[in-house]
Length: 390
Image (cartoon, rainbow, N blue to C red):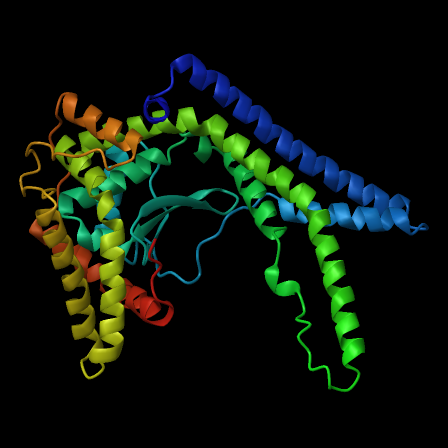
C-alpha cells in the first residue's frame, strides 16, 4: 500500500495546496533570514557599549551568514563549454530547448558522473547543463537526446523547485544545515604517554577543549535540526508538483526524441552503478597497466571500452534499443523505483511519438570532435580523484 501511494501522481487540487504551502514556507525562510540580519545588526550597533548584546548579535550574524541565499556558481573543477567552444553541440541543445519550449542554455559543463542535470548560476540564474560523460558515452545517440530533453524540460519554471523563491530557500536551508553539522575531527585525542613531561596537564587541557567543542555542538544542534526539518518539509510540500513536472518532462522528451527513446533512457538508468564500476575499473587499469601508451590512445580506448561495456550490459539485461528511433518501447520490470515504473508505463501506453530531432553521422562526428578536449580533462580528473560509485 505504501509503495502504491508513492507511485500515484497527486491530484490537481493537492498540487495547488502543497505548492501554495511551499511558497509560504519559502517566504518565511527568507523573512526569518532578513529579520535575523536586521536584529543582529541592531544588537551590534545599538548595544555596542555593552558586552552581551554584541556577542548575541555576532552569533545571530553567523547564523544569517550560514542561511544566506546563494546565487550559485559554476564548478571550477569541471571543463566548461560555451557556444563558441562547441557550436555543433550547442546547435543540438538549442534545437532541443526550442522543441521543448524552454529557455536555451548558457553554458555546458562536462562531469565524470552518470547524470544529466541543469543548474543555475549567478544572480540572473543563467542555465548550465552538467553533462555526465559516462552517461553520454554509454547511451545510444537517440537516448542522449532523450536524456538532455528531459533534463531541460524538468528544470523549466513549471517545476516549483526550479523557481527562484523555492530554489533559493532550499539552497539556503541545505547549506546552512551542512555548515552547522557536527565535526568529528574537532576533538583532541587524549591518548598521551603517561610518562611524558606534564602528561596530566596535556590530558586536562584536551579534556577541557573537548568539553567546549561538545557544548558548541549541542548549541548548534538546535538551529541545525530546525534548518534540516524545514528543508525536509519544503521537499515534501514540493513533491507533488515535482512529480507532475517529471510527467510533463516525459511528454516533452517523447515528442522530442520519440517515445521509444524516452522509455529506453529511463529504463537504462539502472545501468548507472554498473557503468560507474566499469569506469572505476578502467581508471585503475589505465593508471597501472597503460603508462607506456599515448594520452590520445588511452582516452580513445577508455571511452570506447565504456560504450562497449554499456552495450553489452544492455544486451544481456534485455534492454537494448534498436537503431530505429520509432522502434517499440523497451520492456521494464518492477526492480525500478515505483514512480519510474509508472512513468514508463505511461509513456508506453499513451500514443507513441516519432522523433522530432535525431543525430546523423556528420553531427555525431562534429560533436565528438568538440568533446575531445573536455573528455581528456574529465579523464585526467578521474585519474587524479577517482570516481564515486554509489
